[in-house]
Image 1: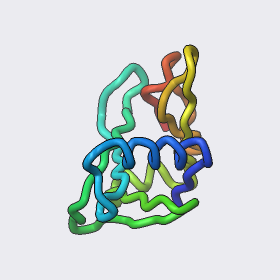
Image 2 (image 1 turned 180 degrees about the vertical axis):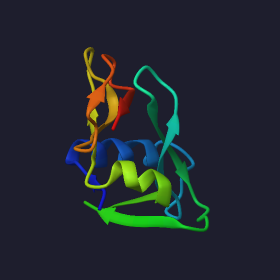
Image 3 (image 1 turned 135 degrees about the horizontal axis):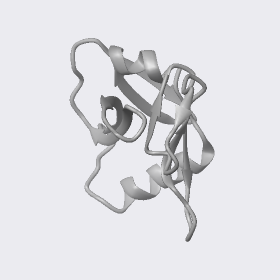
Length: 108
């Protein structure tokens, strides 16, 4: 399962209402190689399903990821932190053994 915190839900709703993102769009998250710690998070809006996509809905937000990325993201929570010291969107990932100082990448 992937979870969505209230803070991320509110920011996703705000972005959706202020842009051309329709109701058929969902949040796509994935993991790629790179970053200080070896693996990086990617997040975007999408409206096309792909083969082997894993679909989750939590807190009224539809989140889609590919099967490989789900192995790294299982039981993670998408969160948002705003303000001057805020990180923007980030994952609270219980599978990460190590993260870089900026929080953009992790290792398992």
